[in-house]
Length: 135
Image (cartoon, rainbow, N blue to C red; front, side, top):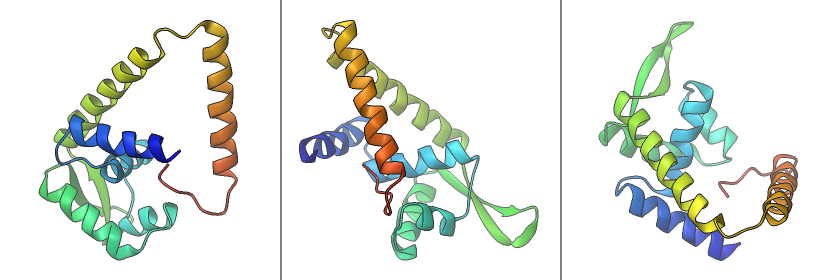
């Protein structure tokens, strides 16, 4: 698992110099949710608000994320991907898919099905756990 996490961090860095694994994870979450508050990110990933603030600040500086007023409460800001953020996330996602296809190209159907079943089982166990991590 350690090797998997290290490879994921290294791959994220190669795909986009400003996009760490944490940044990619946060961008993916924002895309999936259609935007959310920084406090929602902190709660979801059980991270300190200051950690999220630094990460979001870097993503804003890179032009990947923007804050917009919440229509329901103008005092609250919701984080959204910018057009550039969507493009970068799509590029990184495609690069990841190409890398996965390359790594799995020699696997037979039975091995792929077994691997998929194990990943589903792992993710279901992780979703049911007390702490939701980034890996």
